[in-house]
Length: 130
Ligand SMILES: [Ca+2]
Ligand SMILES: [Ca+2]
Image 1 (spheres, rainbow, N blue to C red):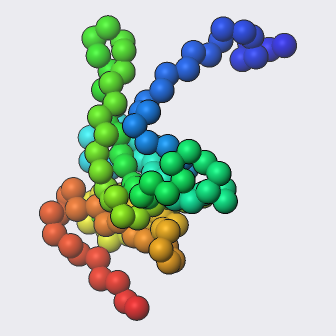
Image 2 (image 1 turned 180 degrees about the vertical axis):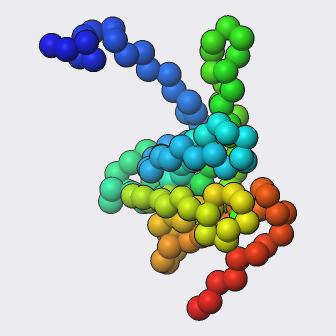
């Protein structure tokens, strides 16, 4: 047994118990401060509706975490969308090259969905063609 398998090597901390079925996770610096944020979300009716709250609406959230002086960590949830979700994957890339990182999720109501991050420009510079 190596040191990572030893009992009591890991302690679980739940970040948010207010929703269920979190799917993909990513750590990405969304606001450009040099510290990554946690991006995640859910779809609905996953696993043949066998998961808890199977029909709860999909969502995309990001969490800002902060280390406190006593070394505890706090997580503040922020909403990107509550009408689209995250399925089995997401992509992170500066799609609109405006200085911040954008997100592409697998969506729930159709094909992939881009969430344009407007942190740097405050204006929509992405033009989708259909
Ligand atoms: Ca950041
Ligand atoms: Ca952007």
